[in-house]
Length: 123
Image (cartoon, rainbow, N blue to C red):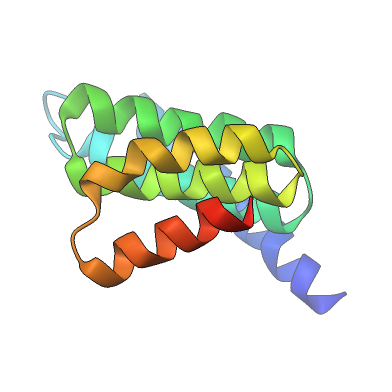
């Protein structure tokens, strides 16, 4: 039960950070979108661990939108990885495969590609 408490606390703190960041003027805080993407990723992971797959998908998709808009390749790869994990864990295997196939060209090492092919094969 303590693990869930940690994720609930992480979710609460991350939401406060999102609320704070959303109020910031991007002209004065140039890293706003980068910080938001990172926080959305963490929120998505917290919701995944709490079993709220819809909220996990929502936040990982927010992370992905920022990554694609700002052309953050590493964050795009992370978001696709996380989306695949949510789909796989929730039993939506065709969606997991589809997302992970989008990640393959972004893999930076043979090990990462091997992992992706393994996950796709598992689905």
